[in-house]
Length: 457
Image 1: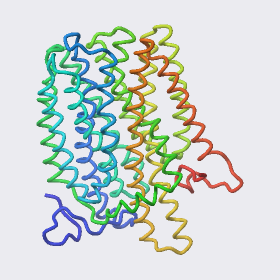
Image 2 (image 1 turned 90 degrees about the vertical axis):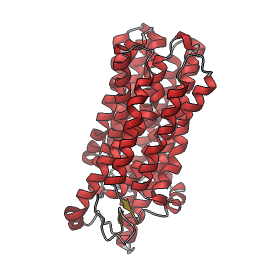
Image 3 (image 1 turned 60 degrees about the vertical axis):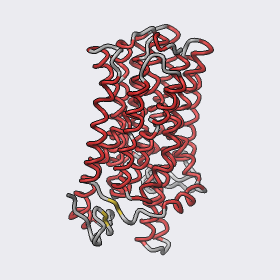
Image 4 (image 1 turned 30 degrees about the vertical axis):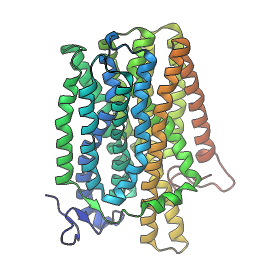
């Protein structure tokens, strides 16, 4: 059973006093509690990502006997992406309403619904609408990310947020690679006729994640009234800049995670086993690179890392177009995996910038005479609100990517037109990052001085 800090009778697992920016509090009490919550948050979020991206694996089991075209399968993978994006806003608010630990329990148990549903419908002859309903239910797994990130953001001080949020998100993202690797092992051993084995593994894991959250996690009482914080950030231009950039980083990660295997099958004629043999590598390396992106942002500044990442993503997209036109599978696969790594780095750097922006604004208000404790608390609430909003908007990028591939294959039986569109988008992203956060002005502000991200909006 976990301990609490100044918790009143009848409110177990509630922490009433939480001051992570106080160095003595952090070293004596806060760090241990925060790290414990982090690791169990990662576990639950990891399972959530696996269920969210379940259909990126299930479509590999759906051979000709299912009667679905490539466009049908891209539609199937798009559906949970859309629902997951929408779910992220209420999930981020739920942390303030119910408590981070309490909502982690609920959100984990909700994963049972799409998992059991998938076990029921996964049969040749099931109509497409039946699959779409169950895939939509899987979108709840995408919501777990927003509540988990909002919760962990409140636990850590500014100096440790980059690494903590990177580990939390990276560990969650790793769920994509793990379920795809599991799909590979099942296809290689039991064949494409045994998709339910995946579900028989994950259903018990969901229950374990919920139990661990109940036993070892805590709620922070001061994380409240985030709807007010949400209203406050709506009018902040940084909100929309960071959300747009997150479409390019996380949206690319989750969109490519769903689409990679289908592109390999339909553009290069790979079998399900051949596609599955490499599909997991991109999400795996992209997940591992996310904490590195947060660490680099801590050291170099979020905007510098984000700008460089988008330039690299544009270069890799050009290589993907060349590889597609020349039918070079080796070059295509290599460039796609490098692109995944860059999305992970960009995910870490953009999320590092969010709490830093509001922390810097709080420092400016404090210097002008505002109350320090109130301003720092306001900064944490606004950071949590923007993390939830940016996560929701960013996830829509995954929907756009799958719909773009769907239309591209319908029109040309190739992914090249979709890649051209992505290239243009990445160009807009690195120009925007430079213009807002890196371009010199008449009244320059150092990157570290303003959020490791800049403040020119």
